[in-house]
Length: 312
Ligand code: SF4
Image 1 (spheres, rainbow, N blue to C red):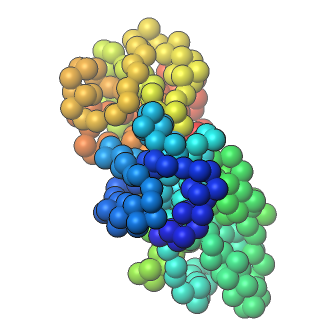
Image 2 (cartoon, helix red, strand yellow; image 1 turned 120 degrees about the vertical axis):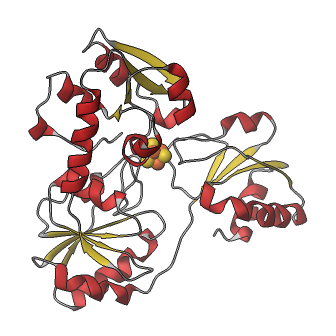
């Protein structure tokens, strides 16, 4: 978690009196402690209690009540002069990378990770290089400003065609799946906390998505969802998708949840908001929720061979 003294210094430099705090779900329990520490330093503090999924979703409305919004947990995605980003870091022992070595097919290793671990990529590189491997890490860009960083909606850092293998360091199965679907490369996923290693295989995932698409094929009407969140809004894409079918209707939403989709009553939806909604949350949704590429395949303007992971 952030070093409070650094944050206090930034707030003092900006002459802040009232500060608003925004946390993702996994860090919300830290709000009380950070608020207490900031109050001790003389600041007034308000806390956003709404869900926060990423830096694509800043609680800018709180700037009506505060001088500055501090967004915890993520790297900058949307620029605003009164927003301070405080990414969350999680350490691991770089030596854990030795566990991935038996899974490599070659000697040129592209390395990617999530924001929690980017600060340790230099140590990982040095260790692999000392063992005779060449390491490749792409510089930060756009939604992923740190070298080697991937997001659930952006896998550009993994596009390293000259690598023999891509090493993903992090937890969960979604990011390495996204890396494999975005690159078509051999992906080795290392959980640096549990020490588990897996070769990523997207086949089961693709079978599941194919089945969702088939359920949506004969839908009477499609709702094409456009997000009202600043960093998830893809209105132009949604307009283009809607033009592909006279059964498609544009729907603006802030929170995309099963109850609202049920209330709206469409037989299927096309999601242009956060890509992870279609992939991770399909199990919670009452009807198929397609990605833009999947809808294009159903509409016959893209072939199944051109299936791609949805990115913003
Ligand atoms: S769009 Fe989704 S994956 Fe991308 S930053 Fe926002 S919450 Fe994360």
